[in-house]
Structures are given as C-alpha cells and as structure tokens.
Length: 283
Ligand code: NDP
Image (cartoon, rainbow, N blue to C red):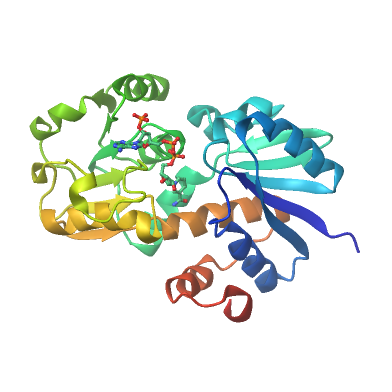
C-alpha cells in the first residue's frame, strides 16, 4: 500500500504539535499516513515543496512565516483563503496546489463548540494583523460578531486587514494608543506573537477598560507563549480566558477532513494534549 506523505512547513517548526495531532487522528480513523515537520526558510519554500511532491507529498500544513507565500503558489484557493490572503492547508491535486485556510473555522469551532460561546452580537477586539489575524477575522464576522475592531502595532496592517474584509459597518481598524477609548468588549483576542519569550503580563500594554466581568479573553498562542496574555486577562478580571490549543486541534481536524474525507475525534486529541499525554499511546 502507498503511504501518503504529509508535512507541516514552517520556520522554525521543530516545536509544532501538528505531526503528533495528525498521527493521533490517523490512529483513530485507521488512515495510513506519514506526517513530518519540514523547516523551510522563506527563500527555499517553493523548492522545498517541489522536493516534497517529488518524494510523494500530497498535502501540507503551513505555519509562520510561510502562509502568504503558500497562498501565492496555489493554482486554486478556497473562498476563506482568498478572504484571508493566506493559506495554512495545501492539497496536491492534478499537478497543482489547492489552498485553504482552516485557522478561522478552527477558532470558531473551538469557541462555539468546546467553550459553548455564542459569538452573535458580541463586540470583539482583535489584537494583531498578521497571518493568524487574517485567517480568523473573516470567520468571526461570519459567526455573527456585532463589531470587529482590529488593532495592530503597525497600524497600516490593521487598516489593510479592515479594508480587505469589506464590511465597514462592522469591521474597522483603530490605533493601539486609542484602546482606552474604545469601550468594553465581549471578546478580546490576542493574535499577536508579543507574548513569545516573555514571562509576565508586562508584554501587553492593554487597558483593563477593554473588559468587563463577562469578557472572554482568547489567546491564539498556547503553552508558554500564552502565559503573559492569560496573566493580563486574569489581572483584568475577565470572566474566562482560553489559549489557542483548541483552535490548533480544530484547524488540524478540518485539514484532516479535507485530505482524508473522514472526521477525526478532535475532543479526544485535545483532552490528551491538555493532559500532556503521549498522543501515539493514548489518542
Ligand atoms: P505573524 O508573524 O504573521 O504576525 C505577528 C503579529 O504579532 C503581527 O500583528 C505583529 O505586529 C504582532 N506583534 C509581534 N510582536 C509584537 C509586540 N511585541 N507587540 C505587539 N504586537 C506584536 O504571525 P501569525 O499571525 O501567523 O501568528 C501570531 C501568533 O498566533 C503566533 O504566536 C502563532 O503561534 C499563533 N497562532 C496560533 C494558531 C493556533 O492554531 N492556535 C494558528 C496560527 C497562529 P506587526 O504587524 O506590527 O509586526
């Protein structure tokens, strides 16, 4: 039997949980696959993908900083990838790459499913305008948030994302320095990498006025990188705070469905990751 090859491309990528998650999904569903992590610098990405296809590669996930480059190499892309301008899931079909972006649906599944949150009617502030923010912003609008305020360290990227969303009634950009004047939000989402390598909430110069005791704080980061933002959310008195582990598992589950036509049990893998189990043994 041919073993189909899959991989996650990133730079760096050694930390990625995707190989473990996809191996666990494959075990659950009886799918035979090989899934590895391939470190590829941006200048070598196209050549690395060519080598991968030559070696039997048929599907790939793409992470930081390659999502926009992945979008550019696709012959066809999904509507949600077009709205994001970024691709995190590649499928090799008929000698061409098809690109999708499952980050946004992954976040929405985690929030509305695992966290039982009704996004409809909520005011949301999105911190960041990089690849991850571009993936989640359209999905938040589709899920019915009342307003999406985008704030980024480099304001021109927030402006560009708000413009690209094409929904000026609901989605607009604001300056980071004006956060104090924006009122409170039902959802505060950190889609920046500001917390990486930090140890406390001081990485986040954010006013507590953004929150009320009903606010949910969401960090797309997970593990140690989520500690500073979650510490800020706790200090601000948010109702609850979740990290990006659930989103990570859900975006992987959507990619797995796309490649193999079968839905894995994302909850089981999420629970095993939370317990820090060895997924190959327990999931
Ligand atoms: P990008 O490099 O594309 O974007 C980084 C973003 O963080 C930019 O908006 C950047 O602002 C901002 N930023 C970086 N440092 C600081 C700082 N010190 N202060 C304020 N803002 C800062 O990364 P991605 O968008 O792809 O990823 C962002 C984070 O989300 C990553 O840490 C990643 O691990 C996580 N992620 C999690 C996923 C999941 O499934 N849970 C999926 C995808 C990403 P500027 O534009 O000014 O540079």
